[in-house]
Structures are given as C-alpha cells and as structure tokens.
Image (cartoon, rainbow, N blue to C red):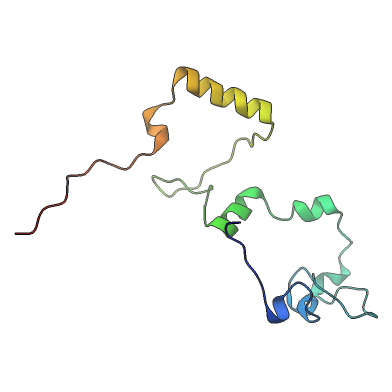
Length: 121
C-alpha cells in the first residue's frame, strides 16, 4: 500500500493515552472510562455518516497525498467543485466519449518541450 502511516508510542491505535491526545478522542480507553476525554465530549454523539462527512474528499486528498484540487494549477486561484461523479456507469460513459471523440490536448497537461542537454566541452 502506498502512503501508509504507522503510529507508535502514544499515537499507536491501541495506546492507552491516545484518546486523551487525539482531537477525535479515538483510541483504547481504560476499562472504567466509557466517555471521550476530549473537549467534544459535550457534543451530541455523531452517526457513522456524520463521522465520514467530517472531512470532504478534497480535504482527504490534500491531507494524504498533498493534492490540492481546490487550487487552479495555472493561476493558483480557488476552484469551485461543480460535481463529483461516483457512479461507475457514468464514469465509463464519460471515458468512452473521450476515447471516441478525443480529449483536448490541454487536458493532458504535458510538460513543455525543451532542447536536448548541452554537451560540456
């Protein structure tokens, strides 16, 4: 697997102190401690769906792979995400269209051509 982060010591998944140190309060808790230790303990319990939605896919890409899809590659300005296509049939249809009609050359983002290296005399 690529980009796998392993934590050791107090940040290890089963460390006793991890729940006290991480913002989400995740980790192994002592037997008598059923409630989270962090400041969000007074918040209402979140459903699994809410926990998944806590971080958007764009934020996850930026955090894990250092890919910022919200910044324009050319000017650095902010980009607005219009849609997120997740259905495999729709993705196949879009890719088939590009394969049939060809994508614009700019879409490939090829690096600019350059001269061959100069030989040292």
